[in-house]
Length: 343
Ligand code: DOR
Ligand code: ZN
Image 1 (cartoon, protein in one colour):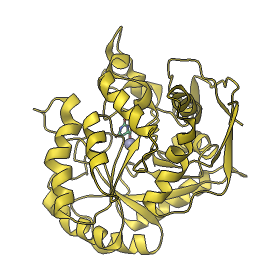
Image 2: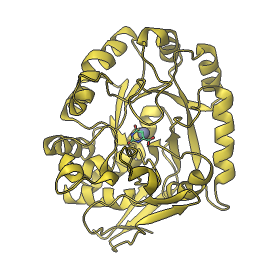
Image 3: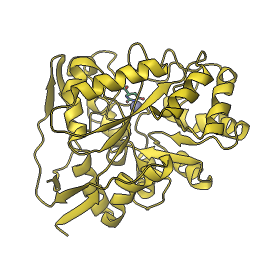
């Protein structure tokens, strides 16, 4: 096969940031994706519906002339979140999900949740109105090994929350383990799981063997090869509960290459080329459209995009960096030559 046409993809987990960084990275997502779930971990975080509305307006103002893109806004869940504000933001159509960061789990998560009982009224309201909860699924306990934090979160936090809040729609975001794949497969249709492009390509050796590679450091951190293979298997299986959330997370090179560097891989420019290759290698090109364009809308109760995107078997070239007024941002290097271009 040398050409594939898909319903235009959506990105169900994206960091656009704000200001100069947003202006630099937004065109790369808008070039390929019709819509994206926009992460609210700005400084300060997007907690209220008024903040989400203002952020949405800034995104639309930064969109280059002639490009179309629909930001699907989220609210950052805190222990002080007002369930009425969440319900109003949902009813107005502004907000499509609420994001749960365990306090301290990742970039700008300090205002996240430490006491899960405190957010129970909001979660119950969300279950009533059908508003999904997007979950960064890692415990933050210092005594839990970083490579085990996702598996422990499923047992200690996620499963208890879901049992206590029947009907709550939950997205397990950027899953990285076979434990998460197995858990997701065993649940009903109230559970979805996103998988990033980079977790289909790298394992922990890419970060740590032969020298430390900060550009492959993200959270949750990539795990052993057996986990990467479980993710590939889930993504390419066609199962409706797995869909693309790139977690494209730009940081300037200056902030990545520090003694304590930031977590995040910037994959927006080359995600579609990488995915076409991954699915082709696994003999699953016919499942690519489900993963990038159909399963996500089905979970969120939104229509599949009527516009399309075409990929052709022509080696693409990507610049190693995208420049922003804050400094260069390194584009994710999959470590192999790409063969599919977006037309
Ligand atoms: O690698 C990551 N980067 N994981 C996250 O959870 C947050 C993100 C970011 O905002 O940089
Ligand atoms: Zn993220």
